[in-house]
Length: 301
Image 1 (cartoon, helix red, strand yellow):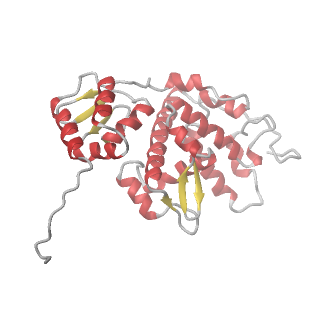
Image 2: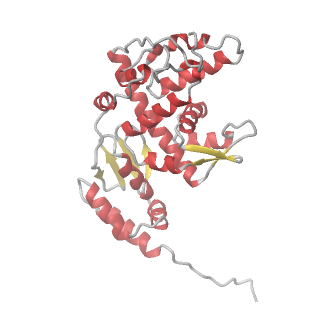
Image 3: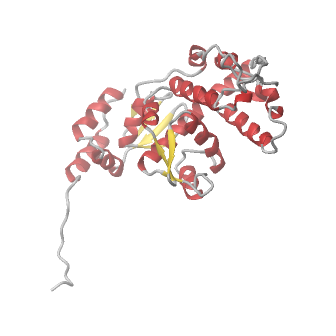
């Protein structure tokens, strides 16, 4: 579309509403992308991601994130990183990609709040030719022709559109789900529409005798984050499972938990109390935590 003097597009966006099926699919992608980016940020909090000379995340880190289940495939990382950078959740420092204070705060938010931050950052990071004077976004159907003199632009436009679709800002074929209509038109996000489309977050789990925990729905992120200080998540879906081991409990103790704080947290969270096998692992791990065994070397004089 033609541009005004400030570089923004002069044409008003003409969003095509997403169908019910497209809207449901977009909501599912938002849930998946938010959870994946949270996993990437958590990994980067422990060990910053390494950047190549070209500025991309290293192949070793892509493999590590894929094997841990944070991302489905190595190529999935690019859209997540692009969104995280645009929203100020990540920043490059030298040859490392580190989590910012904003990123740590983002982790504490629910899926709707997380998406709102991503969507706003995405809009603000768009080239001027894709933004309207009203603060909206031009019709995605015309993105590819916005900068006809730039040979790199078609690929860049395709990447921006792919990011928008991964994050549910756009639905299939560039149609617009209800929560993004205001973003496109420049009138603001409709977070209520997104909240209505997502399954309600829960604050209770089932603790089982086999040292697993089952969340029968999407666990509130602040609870998920703390639970994962003391358990390893085995599956990530709208219903997730977690496993406790001596190693995961020990990691929580190292991070500042105590046997009492772990029990208090689990009692508040569990619909089934604390099973005896789990209580035993907490006890034995806490009693051994921090102890050092010194043995003499028989080969020494």
